[in-house]
Amino acid sequence: MDAPPLDTELLRGFRFGCRPDCGLCCFTTPAVSPDEWRRVRTVRPELTTVRSGGSVVLPAHPHGGSCLLLRANRCSAHAVRPHPCREFPVTVHVGERLQASLVLSCPGLDLGGFRRDERGAEPEGLSDELAAVRARVGPETRRQLEQAVRRRRTLRRRLGAEGRWEEETEVRAALREAVPTPDRDDFPSVPPPPIEGPWEALPMYFDQRAAPVALAERGDGWVAVELSAAGGGRSVGVAVPPDRPPELDVSARELLTHYLRYWLERDAFFGALHLEMLDQRPGRMREEAGRALREIGAATVTAAAVRAQLDRGVVGTLGLDDIVRGIRVVDLDWLDRPTWGGRL
Ligand code: SF4
Ligand code: SF4
Image (cartoon, rainbow, N blue to C red; front, side, top):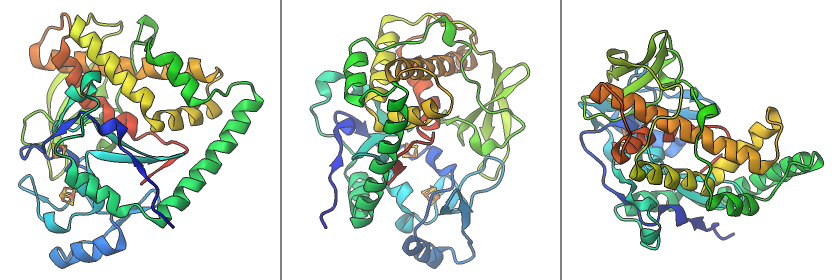
């Protein structure tokens, strides 16, 4: 049976170069296959795996710490690192098709790839990551795709019976040219998890420090915590998130629109949206997609304003770089939401 094709349209025009001083993607517990685990054991025989949500993963230091294989900000098993580490920042949603997308929290990605005039170009610096993805696409992937198509059919039937279903192509076409951006009612935006923990769930970003910074909610605002690879961390500031939309300059507004349009093209967006509609949302797909985009926009602008406060003290008008920093905080967190499709 032929391997299904990989849609890489959402990678076009982007440039990637891993930042050796970063380590953000190592503050995690990567999934590991049996073969990969055998290879990791040759380098670190004392390690044991952990079960997490149906996967076998490498262990991490507790309380927000890094993967146990990270030493002095470097992977101590680089040659045998498992597939999530080889493929990051590429992520693949298995829905009606295999759609590759980028985890835009990664600071090694140049967000200039959003610009339409560059979208025809092949991605730069991602050949190893794409080769690692393609090496895992096989007959089992086709079975995953078939399962995802069946799940979508069930959702379509149930939402259709309530008169709430519209095809993704129609919703995309309707919203692409007039992308809904957040308004007053979308603020205050969804806060990060509380400081009491678990810290593993906190949104993180690279801030040119020794380790990533995580945001958490505390009574007096959002606290920024510089994490330690060994677990725990120290507060490096508190900021009060805006309760109304901050001013954005023209370039910031334009970048936010590009970002929300990118979400509209991700199959994972619709996968998560359909599940939400089934569980709790009353509207038709177009309204719900618009609401979800405004919610992502509000989270991005809020994270941008919080980082601007932490960096500059006073927030006036947010600019392009501020929105880049907001995207770096929120993207992985939103991508992590459950969808009816799986991940490769
Ligand atoms: S988050 Fe991106 S830049 Fe940072 S270490 Fe991982 S791949 Fe490299
Ligand atoms: S295995 Fe290596 S590259 Fe992967 S998360 Fe752990 S330290 Fe990072």
